[in-house]
Length: 141
Image 1 (tube, rainbow, N blue to C red):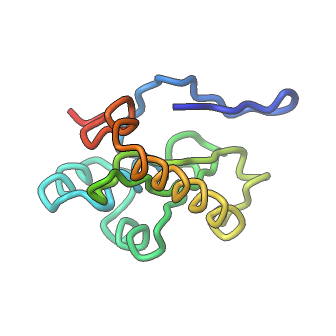
Image 2: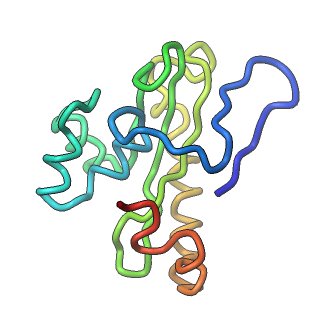
Image 3: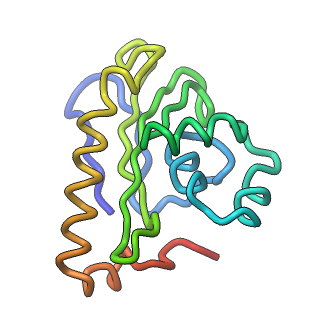
């Protein structure tokens, strides 16, 4: 896992290793969208997003959120897949809605999806890397 911070100005920080709820945010949407039906139903209980939102994530290949996790913060996320094709992680960007806009996916999804595809390819070419941090069951209870 990695994180990059702006050297000056307003920051939206989530320290590496922080555990967040899977009930809000674009990364949660992406990680849940491709789960099996049972996990999908369980994950939607109390979530700030709906089955319709997750269907859009699957159709587009990325998720976005506006203030779901933190008021005034927008995010865009895309899935990273393991060697089997299963979603094992998400690449995300986040920042103030004023900077990312009220439609952050329109402006930023392409670069986020490209980064997720690059990580997916690295994992597929180097399956042992998947076992050290991006494994098929990494982060799953």
